[in-house]
Image (tube, rainbow, N blue to C red; front, side):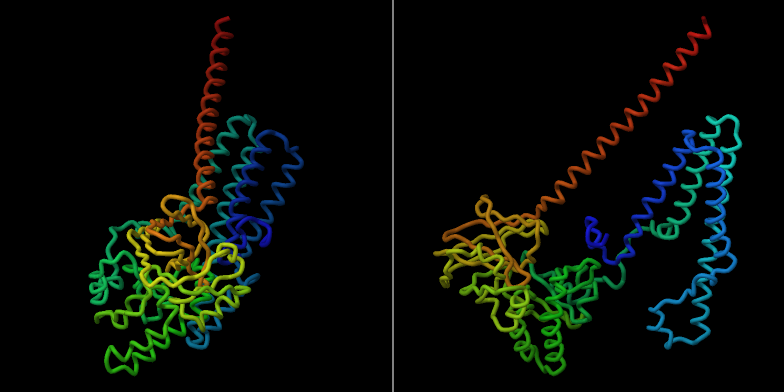
Length: 447
């Protein structure tokens, strides 16, 4: 299933696939009720299946309620991380809490099972099956609502519906206020307090680090191979520095941070940030291109090249560079004019065709045009975007327009509309049939 079901291998953890039985089990349950209500189950089969189902599910919940430790130890391999750091009584109390939570939920489940069984038993013994179907259906719906409502309120309750107030941890710092004075369209900021996990910089700025559950693997590998080492070098330089000028060599020796346009370094939120004069900017032209054989060679090349002068390109994108010969043009310019998260506009001017590198992440779904005409771009320097820019003055626009997402969104919207129409049609058809039946009954009565 992991290798063949669509998007199954995109889950952060395989446990997230529990949404599949969470969807399938209710469908099967309602399907079973539908078959029973249609009268397609013989009485002897119904009785035997009913008793077996009640005995198995109810019996299991009964055992877990009375003896939760019979099947489960309520210990986790993760406990080893803190077990030796807390008193024994504290750890045993934690185990008991886990067991009591399981016991309480088992009792809760047992009550729902017995109530559901009582509704089915009432349907089984009822003489008027039509009335019994209505009562049983309403009862099952009420039980389902109560079950979902009470569990959902564990995670989303009144405490979640309060007026939003800025958290103290995200209060504007002195460093933030200084950075806000910079009116350029786009640049990035590096915080030196555990940058790959913290979220405070990301709250106000385009952060080099930050945390997200679905961080790009390629960016994580860039962190591990390049960014973390450069960050640590800056930390080391700060510890020895007497003046700001003492930090400059470390910033100059951080090509990967510079190609990501890291303009500010926050070393103390209560102090003005350090401005990095070596940041490459939003885009630049390179004088040389190196075609490498694979991804390993591509990321290894970042250890030796100067990204401001040389672009490294995987050979799978070599066709995008066919016929191109780099020519240095000291007067060529490329400037980011407008920035939105899903639309970037650049102005370029060069006397000859140039290879531009953009300080933006290469990711499927981005479309690029030159003067409104569709163009192509490719990955450069492991993580960034590169493309050929013709000679002359041009407007380059990147738009995020993932075809698969747009198609899926359209299918979802039209499907929802179709389902709504079918629901309205079904209600209308049922109402019309009921009206005809009543009219026929009245006519027969008159006759």
